Image (cartoon, rainbow, N blue to C red):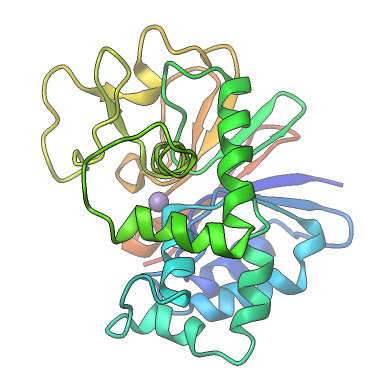
Length: 265
Ligand SMILES: [Mn+2]
C-alpha cells in the first residue's frame, strides 16, 4: 500500500521496469504517480505507453510538454515524420486507444497535501488558481475539436499576440505548467531561457521566487533534467534525474519521502 512518484521517463522503458523492480512495486496494492514526459527522445516510447496502459488503474499522471507534443503529432498539427520515437507511437495500431487514455490525464493533480505538476507553477498563482486553470485547459484537451484548435495555437500559430480568449488562456496555462523554469521578479515566465542559455541576472527558478504563493504547499515536479533530481527549496521535490541523458530515473516514496535512483547509463 505504498505511493511512489517517478520523474520523467521519456521512453526509457527498460529503466522504468528496473526501477519498479527495485521498489517491489505491486500495481494491485501500490500507487504510482508520474510527473509526465512519458515519451519522446528515449528508445521505447511505445513500450512505455503500452505498459502504463496495462496498469492504468494504479496510476496518477500529469501531462508533460512532450506528451502534449505527441498529441499534436498524432493530430497532424506538427510534422513528426523524422522523429522515430514518436512515429512508433503515431503509427501503432493501438495509437488511438493509448492517446484517448493519455489525454484524460490532467495537467495538475492534488491529493492530501501534495501537488503534482510537470514543470512548475508560476509564483503569482496559488494552488487553487493553478487547479482552476489546469482544469479549464484539460477540459479543452479532452474535447477533440477544441483540442485541435488549442494544439494549433500552441505549435503552429507563432504570432505573439495574447488575447483574452479561452484558447489563449489555455495556451498560457499549458506553457506555464509544462515548460516553466525561470521567471522574472514580476513572476513572468521566459520560456526561451533553458538550461543551455544563461538566464538574465534578474531571472530565478520559479520555485526560488521570494513571493511565491505556493511556498507553503508541497509540490512535486519533473521537466528540469539539469537539476538532476535535486532542489534545496523546502517542500519542493524535483524528480527529473535526466534518465534519457544518461542520468537516473528517480522515484520518491510519499510514505517516507525517501528517494530511489536507477542509473540509466
Ligand atoms: Mn518536460
